[in-house]
Image (cartoon, rainbow, N blue to C red; front, side, top):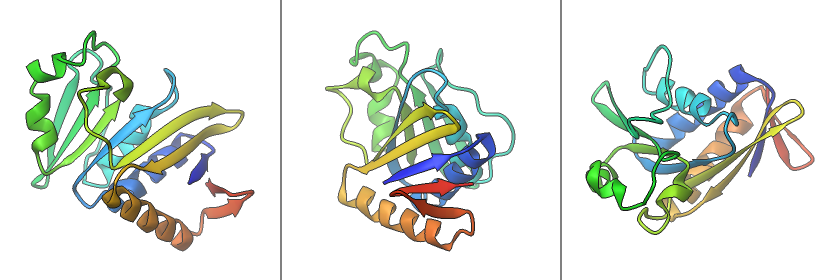
Length: 168
């Protein structure tokens, strides 16, 4: 599934729709170059659970926990991770075992240590905005993609063009 997001507002709105589809649990990998919008998309996911305000990438802290209306979410940024084993020292096993939403930027830095995600999103900077490619990595992820497709079909802004969903 691919989605074209024309601007930051569309990215946040799509993230919020994705947050609703996650229904409070799931492991999501966000991939893409620096500046591709991984943290912007995360801001939208957090909005689905009531977070207001800025969301900063936990580049230096590696993990930022959120507790929103009794819902736990974890935002990890592994960009500065030198070795996947470092995840053990920051409590990665506990984070991944929690029944929560866990969003991981730069998951390739944790390769060999991290489990397969429910959803893998790859963000690419294109002429106008971002192109997001979504792939399921589990049965739960496949269910999430089906729910998201259904949600897009209900949104007045979601239109299919050349196999790519245009989210405006």
